[in-house]
Image (cartoon, rainbow, N blue to C red; front, side, top):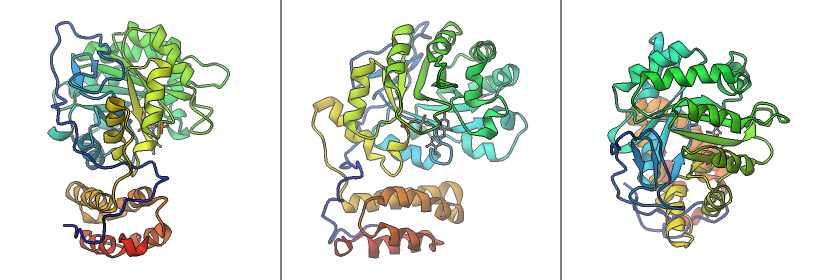
Length: 373
Ligand SMILES: Cc1cc2nc3c(=O)[nH]c(=O)nc-3n(C[C@H](O)[C@H](O)[C@H](O)COP(=O)(O)O)c2cc1C
């Protein structure tokens, strides 16, 4: 696949990359616990056989790939899993779209054995529909059913979905009760610090979730008003952790292994959920696992590893979405993978003209060389 001559240099720093290392090799599988709806943290900052448990699902790393629409598709989840991510989450999927048999949702729901455990994330606002769809997902490869209460985009919020639900605790209770009642699988919920900046209510929502039988919560330390701006408030994650017994996944602004450890230590959270820090950087999982285990910070991927990852990503996307769509989608991934590299802007312009995997391979072979650095 990739010629090795001339690629021994390390990718220049500054992109928070890491050396590619073999994944933990653990089986990341499920194991049943009697009566196991309540999960618990087994080991502080632990990476290992059971670093975290969500209901009946054991994770071998406390690092979780956050759901990202347009990013965490099957191809990307597989790459992150290979790097030792403990749990992957699909892009958000509309419960209504599943109900009405929308054909686009089929691809979003596709899960492959190697990536498991996998959480499927639903969004919606109707308790009955969400319960019914959760029940349908009971049969299938999804290990955990997650519910989205964090999405800030107007199209979703104006429908009373995503983060809008944080303004309506009664509905939250009805939805979560319905979902939990309909399934044996663990149900989790991801929400923000609050909707309004001056009315943070993550603790209230977490308590409701726990009382409804939800198995774990994920808290993004920003309000809906903040969108993605400003800094994530990790103290709200600490407050949620102190308020409930179920596991808490902290989320927001983790871009480095050091930040992941800091979040675990400062908030006491059980798992760290990483979104933007994983874009173009699946190594963040192997590198952070290694850091949590040993305290040693590994350097970024070598150029040959970067190239190999991009090619594998392109090949996996081609396999699952066809070459045309794959090459179009690789444009944004390429920009993330190569951000900070010399000549990355020129490379991005060229990748925009690529139509086939073969052309992409040739471009990378000719462009990502020491001579270009
Ligand atoms: C491109 C993109 C797509 C996202 N899509 C989703 C989604 O489908 N569901 C969800 O719950 N959150 C979604 N999020 C929010 C992230 O999961 C995460 O909460 C947020 O980015 C903060 O984490 P970070 O600082 O690690 O990026 C998305 C974020 C980004 C950047």
